[in-house]
Length: 266
Image (cartoon, rainbow, N blue to C red; front, side):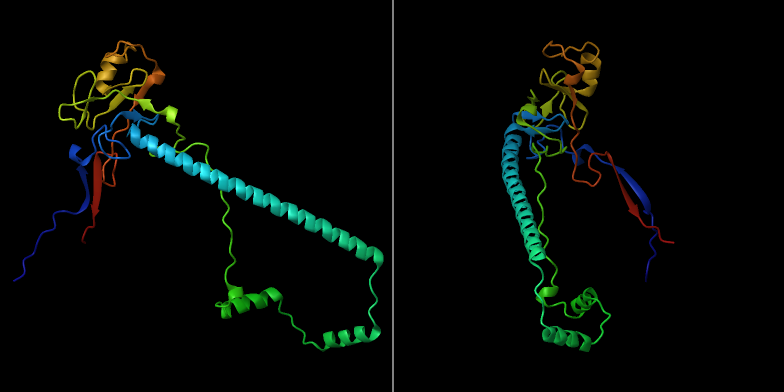
């Protein structure tokens, strides 16, 4: 006996992601572990100092090699241009000499035989390019019909390596040191003012004092007075850095909601 089952789930379904589905604040964007000696970039991403420094050193070496290859390519192109100019100049000299010395007279017998051969040929209205295209379609396996090799030209390398997350040019001196407090378990960072664990909330860093705190704490205590509540040091608007919230492994990374569509049976 067959039982009918009522279809209850169809259409677009929306589900709110929990904090367990998102990576917690303070995890390095390269190692995906809690950052050691944390530093930040101007985009608000956080890294372990050792990981980002190693990345920059590697990328700088790659850029150095790319620049050497690019300069070599430019020198080769210049050499080819000079050879082409020399060849053109030599052809002009040869043409000038031939024009001044005159054309050698061809004998009448030789001229007549050549003319007879030309007149005896069958009139062919098909162009050379048409014949070559037809041969290429019918005999594509021949070496002369293989596609021409186009040498790939290198583009000018960037002056600085890109940031791993934002893609902006990044230098070693652009890294911003952070003074992050770690909880007793050593697994999470804490707000420098309230002592709350930083997970998926909005976080602000004051770059000149290196302090990291919850945005709600910053808005209520630090922003009105422009004084860091931890060090008592004044700061300016340019020193306020809104840290990036960590993403997740879902396709809706960075969002708190994910949607899934199920087709409807009609």
